[in-house]
Length: 405
Image (tube, rainbow, N blue to C red; front, side, top):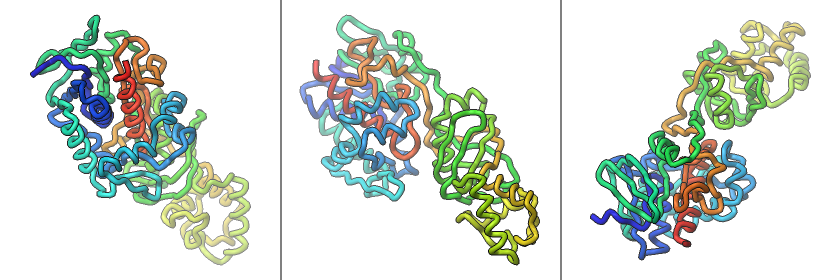
């Protein structure tokens, strides 16, 4: 095997394969190899979206798309003007993979199988003679006068240019630190909240459609659907908060309070509505007259939390109880005591400092001919296909830049 390559890509995940295929397709004369530490690649692609692969998100305006990136919002605006959702859809369609948009904007292959994406990558890599070397864990990277020397568990390679696409890999970050790069220490992003509270203890599976959630004592807030789980709370309202608050919540050791507004009305307006209900439903029990389009089981728990008995009628509740119920509906305080990983989609905030990356080319500002793509840099996104879109965009721009000089 010839261990001298024109371009070596370290990491056989989404970004690595996407970059390798684009380079090899544009420049068949170049020797391109992927070094992957595992016995197979594309593992995140395989498990993404519950095995369906959430390829991207149907957001077609760059300035709107960047709002889904707690870290990278400013830096990705330019890159998204060059390659974004529409380009991703076209890229896959040109290679026989049709994507579909679901109600929430997430995009999947029509086949509903991540294997479709994996097969596409493997076929394209083979077609364009990309050498994919599995079980090659990188031990060291050294700069040479005309490129790089890379020592792996299976031998030493030399290359004029290197693209790093290893995702959240602490060993690789350490090697980059040794080369002079600054690594922002990783903390988990995209996690659910562990909450022990009698209001939600017995109602797992309940979804409140439109809530507002704030982290008490901070500026962190988000909105969207909220799911009550066996261990606490999840769904977009919580996951967005966990992503945008990743660094702050880690500092608090995942012990903090959240304030939940279950009905997206302020307390005063809510109280007025409740007073109207007291008139309108005087003879009915509160528990049997659910308001604000809330799930019945959640409504019942919030009523009990406001010191209202199960069989109490609207006519019989006093001013204090009405005020307490308005508080429960609009300003319910819950104590968070920890976090749980969201499905298998473990995402971290952290990586190569964004100030050290040229986002016109995705090349290192410190080391010539060293490029990055994907989660290896300090970019992460909320759930919904956005992390993959960052991978496709970075890989595409890096692949175009790497072959220019």
